[in-house]
Length: 396
Image (tube, rainbow, N blue to C red):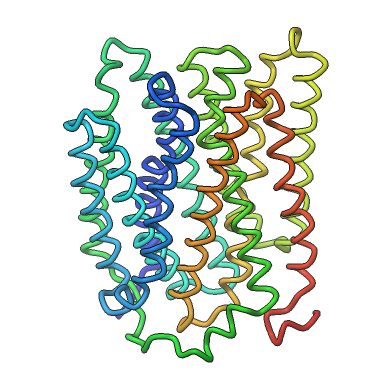
């Protein structure tokens, strides 16, 4: 079968854009429900998405092997279509929990399938470029969801904001049609991993990578879901501008990943990552100094300064992922990606709880400082990740 690799990217990019809008609608939901539900209650809400992601990632690897990546992707989109059509029709907080659980299940199926398709159809730096391109769509999805819902919330149809999810359902239908005609290299059906094969996932480099993945998503979640609330509570901007600032964080993140998809073909991932981490920490430090010493005079500068972080934060996850995924055999890809999804989901859930407690305790004044702490952990672990080989856990 002849595979056109350029055509493979388009439906995968649309797929990640769809799930980005779903997963990152949490910022909108938190903003809209914060007057009805406590921050503690909203912090727990994220777990209804993340726990199903963990469960599905653990239990459905062999099912995806048998079903095929493309079919699993289509099934995940069908779940999305049904749940998004139903959401505006059920006016109850409890349904958000069910809806998020369905989104979590669907995303777990989709992410394992998308990364496996990339692994099977791209190699080496082309694989890193493909992951960065697909992940760039994840960032532009955050931009669209914030711009779209921000505009809707300031219009005369603000009470019908949940009907915005019907647009996502429509995009999902288009994605299903694109996937139906897509030709890809699929996995050969393999047997479940034997006990001895699990030793691979206990190699030092893999363990360090999983911890890094946890904290990277932890930080991303702290921005994506809670930045609008920080702008509204601490900078006293209205909901529309709070969401627009978050949208521009996503726009800068999109450009960050798009640029990365080109530059990674020329530069070593490690230098790239260190530069990005230093820039994020520098901008956060400047932001915290402004809040502490120049709040009254320059607080609105933060609305423009903080979104620039996306340019440097967004390359991290695809760069770490591609570095390790390139060294994982095709036979282990599904299992490896499932564990990436698990640690990412745990990072998302714990990150949201971490931010919820900070806001609940009225410590959001130190929002940049609290985000810097996990970033420093990532910075330290990156040195070990670069120095450790996946082969026998030996130093390079």
